[in-house]
Amino acid sequence: MSVANSAAERVTGRGRRIRWSVVEQALAGYLFILPAIVELAVFLLGPILYAFVISFKHFSYLDPLDSHFVGFLNYVHLFQDPVFLRALWNTTVYALVVVPVQTAIAMMLAVIVNRIRGKTVFRVIYYLPSITSTVGVAVIFSFLFQPNGLLNRLLWIVFHIQGPDYFNSPIFAFPAIMAVAVWTTAGQFMVIYLAALQEIPEELYEAAAIDGAQGFAMLRYITVPSLRRTTFLVVVLGMIGAFQVFDLVYVISSASSLPQQYTMTVVLDLFEKGFRTMQMGYASAMGFVLFAIILILTLIQQLWLGREDG
Amino acid sequence: MRMATSAQSPSWRRAGLWMYVMAVIYAAISLVPFLWSIYTSVKPTSEVFQLFAPWRTLTLSSYTSILQNFPFGRWFLNSAIVAFIVTVGNLVVNTFAGYAFARLRFPGRGVLFYVFLGVMMIPGQVVLVPIYMLLAHLGWIDTYVGLTVPFLLSSTMVFLSRQFFLGIPKELEEAARIDGIGHFGMFFRIMLPLARPLLAAQTILTFQGNWNSFLWPLLIGQTTDMYTLPVGLNSFYGQYNAYWNSVMAGMVMLTLPMMVVFIIFQRQFIQGVSQAGLKG
Image 1: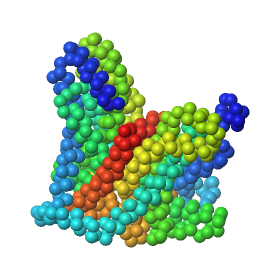
Image 2 (image 1 turned 60 degrees about the horizontal axis):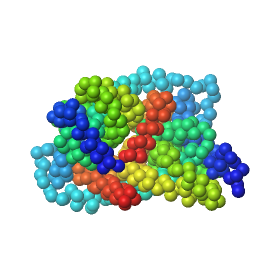
Image 3 (image 1 turned 30 degrees about the vertical axis):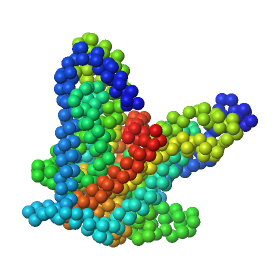
Image 4 (image 1 turned 60 degrees about the vertical axis):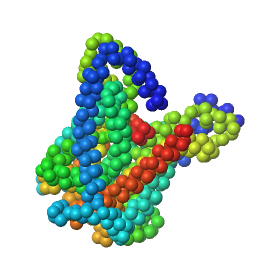
């Protein structure tokens, strides 16, 4: 598609030069793009280079004069640091649980919403958690998940089960956080699925109906396979988001009496190392490990989609 | 054989009862946490853990209390100011860049575009440390400048803007050019009026992202006066988490404005998200 576009541009570009000079157009181009370039250079590319350099340094903001190069030591230490390894483990578990669950719920909701009356109302309701501040969400569920909060009261009334003190329990704290994360993002991915559902050609369903397929067979043999690309996108986007989880665990774990290891995640660890113990070189190395993980996930996406297209 | 019976609506199109049941159950799962929290915010402190407080005891005193005794008003204002500046800034920066990438030819355009695409995958947390140091060096910590200026670019929105402008027919541009329009007239008088859907989606998504943003304001706003609402609510919750009605009043202040905006502009919201999702 992009090849066709640029070819079309080249053709009409010849006509354009008659009235607008090349130089003038280039100048206008640079002017329009200047603000973005400045932002990019000052607040992204520059800082990335700087972070890369100090990730090879012993560097603390408290004592900048004491900084010196330590080679790969920060990276080596990371993979021997039980706190970071725990954070990496927790985050991986988080991603591997949250992403499939939220993807399944998102797809199911989209299929349902697409067919029922009152589509707009349900779509709005399901999307509400996604537009809510994560701090707000953390506070809402900290209250619902109190030992004598609404969830446990309902559990008692309906099943006569005494629920735990979720966010202060070593067993339940992290799963509870994951459940809240699913609640927050499922609606957002539902919207993406809903858009993709509109692209499935009606003829596919008609053909399947002639072959005698109905209900779940339609879902299994037409809908789910047709949504393959979207599912892949939703999974990768979900993974990238999951590996960056911070707000939710920060708010919940600061209010919890639980030792931090139970809810430690990569970005939380990065934040603690960078700004509480001021090991900024070390924290930067952590940032690049996170970057590497996300880069690998993105490359998998690109390669897979590329293969699909080819 | 079954489909023959339903001329206007084929069987695979009709929703079964189970679909409505599931839809309503999940709607309850989505809504009850909000409703329960709002309900809690109007209960008196003594009734917070009662399932149902008597109607007469319901009160708005948690709201007046957090507004009078804590800087929630100031935090609300800070959030509004910061989100406004960041949104306007992003509109300018991203739309300009998207337009240049789509409609103007200049040396280095291809390379630059790949740079923008490339940085889309860099997680912001990688630059947490260096940006903090840069802002400290500039004296921007704990200022509105620090809370806004570093966040005026979104490569995703540059990309979306470019896609949008690529879709505008050449004929329109050529017609305007015959009338002798300049580069800036072309952008402001011809392109921008057409770009309303793009601007709406961008405004909404940027405003929402910034209004809810937590990690950066937590780092940059350091004195109580420079907290944004999420940072303020987090700190209030840390100190007064026994007063659930007040905590929930703060939560409502934080989330309700966004919900109202969302319900009014839900079409643009959802279009924006599905575009960003499908193309991103």
